[in-house]
Image (cartoon, rainbow, N blue to C red; front, side, top):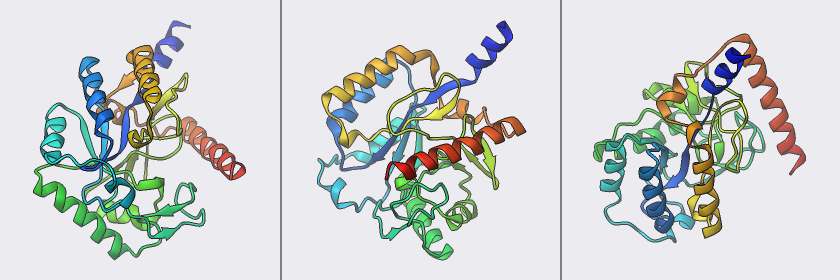
Length: 254
């Protein structure tokens, strides 16, 4: 029994992932979150949009020294991820995207050459700002096989998306699952959050701070999540079932 409890404890954790980090965003909550993360020694993943052209996001306040701030976060050990390139959707997946999320996409449906170009442009911006990138997650969770081919061709082989209870390797890419839209932790398994600060009210911030306080011992870093990659038959079967269940649930809720 003690061995089982130990195994569950060692393999239960949540990675804090923030989406839509850009020069134009809800900086009031970002500033507050930075204080919280420092206070509790949390090292989140920040999904940065390098060449933001999203009209909705551009309506938010602009932070002039944005890239200096990103470099500071990086120096604190926070993981800076590429969250698309422009964050502009120009294709509809018709539910044919790789993970079956459906909806609009920045990448799905484009040629391999086009997707390589998008990712190259994003990497160039990060390079100009002296920020090294090793991980990616697409806006709206929408990919096709060309997306992964493009990423691999440019040296990015880590993605924070996918289904399952544990991080896994598939087609030479390391995936860390992102399962729920709400901040929620399973009693067993490794996953990441999906947080959109621009949609928050004060109540959301308060709830998140309470979540952190309650689950502090289960919050892990990006490298800790990567170290939990498990492609055993048992977990591969669970990941397959998780994918089927969540895709069915999303289809029924449409």
